Length: 127
Image 1: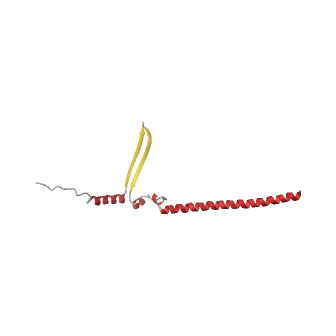
Image 2 (image 1 turned 60 degrees about the vertical axis):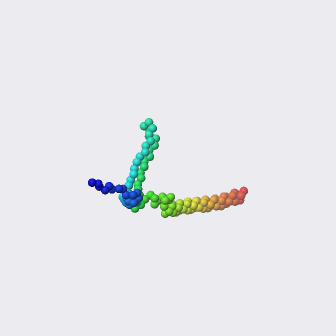
Image 3 (image 1 turned 135 degrees about the horizontal axis):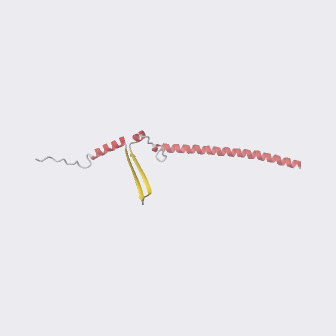
């Protein structure tokens, strides 16, 4: 009696659906891959690298409290705009402080100059 053997399906027909299902599940649930690499020489630790990889959808990452890409100016145009706005405000404040300091100094110099001129006139008159 012979039984029909089950032949594997041709490559690419069902693997695409399986891969899509796996990818959907990973992105929906999230997956964490962690590992450490240590390089020792004669029981002396020379280098330690700690690797932590999280693969998840953006929504799942936000649920976990991971949203660093929203605040990185290299990755987010909003973060870059906010950074430029903040830098612009700081520069304007600094410029105002410098102008205010210059104006005060200018007033003090004028007052000092006026006072010096008066003192010089009084000296000349007394001679």
